[in-house]
Picture 1 (cartoon, one colour):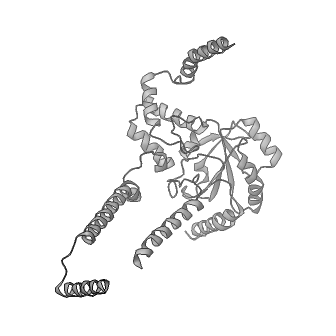
Picture 2 (cartoon, helix red, strand yellow):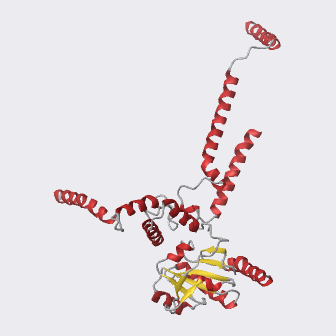
Picture 3 (cartoon, helix red, strand yellow):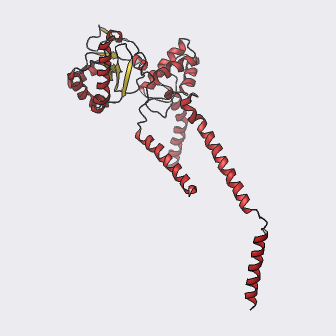
Length: 179
Length: 159
């Protein structure tokens, strides 16, 4: 009897492994930057390139950095959701405009609306490399001490927003207030 | 007509190597730097098209990363430092040769475990088979029963 059960057990183990493999998105590479300091940057602002913005200015606040580009198709899907999220005022959303042309990026915001407090321009993608960006959109939740607490690869869906990002932001704000 | 085709085919063959050579021209100016870059980039995975190396990929991100590596080589960084820089940002996924850590033990040693397991199964199977094939002497009881059976059948046949 055992003789016949062993191949069956091996087969079931294989099925479980394959099922897990099928359920995973191979494009989602876990970031080693979670719970590490968010790389700092000084980049020109998209709207007014004479002004710069630095990640250091956000110390003491919980904020979101969203990597986007006008050439990015998933960003177009994500955009109306970001506008809704921004309207709730739960957390400030900043944009990192990645390898884009300034006029294209501005036209995109004019056309689709602007959910960002402000966007900075990373024309040659150097800051994106520091953040381990490999495809837009990507979204980072950064806490008061400037630590990356969460990274979403791909569009922030309503599930991710209400199930992961929002509870995390509320928890971080609570911790910050009690300190 | 056939002559025309063969001549044009010959011409095409003659031209093709030049066309390829032109495409593969290094983009940097220092051949030593380019050689190191190519060697390093062949060990690194492009994160956009995951089955291509950074050296082969034409994705914009791969170009950016090659530029980054080129600049770091020019700045005198060692290969180890550059790999460290990239894994700090993109994780071990970028390495085509993952490091031997507890998380990758299964990856590195799994095949050998499977090989040893297979050998063990093979040997026990061969041993079992050999044991079952070898002739065992009959016990006294078995011999008596066999002789009884033989005697009774031979008796029946003769009648």
